[in-house]
Image 1: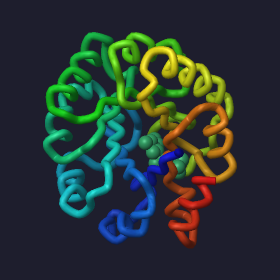
Image 2: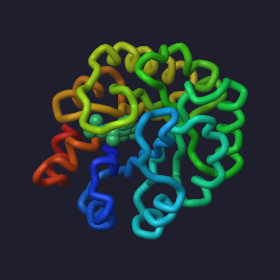
Image 3: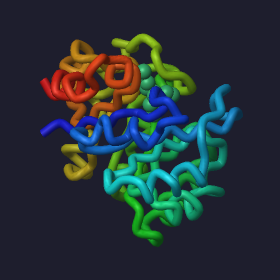
Length: 215
Ligand code: DX5
Ligand code: ZN
């Protein structure tokens, strides 16, 4: 069963509460945190996650596009994030492991994320220790509304094989340029969680867009 995770990066932050209600048919809510360093854009931080948490019971899938994310694991966990994903490119491996250890201690689900340039094999040391989610970026992180990078499909397939081998409960999420058409390609390649920003919030009817993504 595929899960759909609307990205609120494409919502109107002035009416965020209403925009979250509009996607309540979805499974998760995808929250993009950008620091202006790891990615050129700045989006939202801990106080916004706190406010969202008071407003909805949806599972908060929090994508940290932040340098040295270990600095913020506790703050986002306490703000009410259900899952945190940290990019492998944001710190040295021991620090990424330490961030995942802290998520475990705090009882928040733990994920890793990969830029398009990062190879499938990079997930292995983390998958072998146990993960809840691997996020494969199918655009360069930083902005919504970009075109899907089809060259990432083979990476999704390889990571799905690694998941089956080492940690079958781990979810495999794709993020970037997902629409009804590219969603099918991602699911065929092995993804089971689909993030979509513009395909949902840019649609006249977000609930129908969510249904179309489910296929
Ligand atoms: C981009 C973010 C995505 C973004 C996806 O760096 O991680 O979650 O909101 O937007 P779309 O679906 O429009 O590509
Ligand atoms: Zn994202």
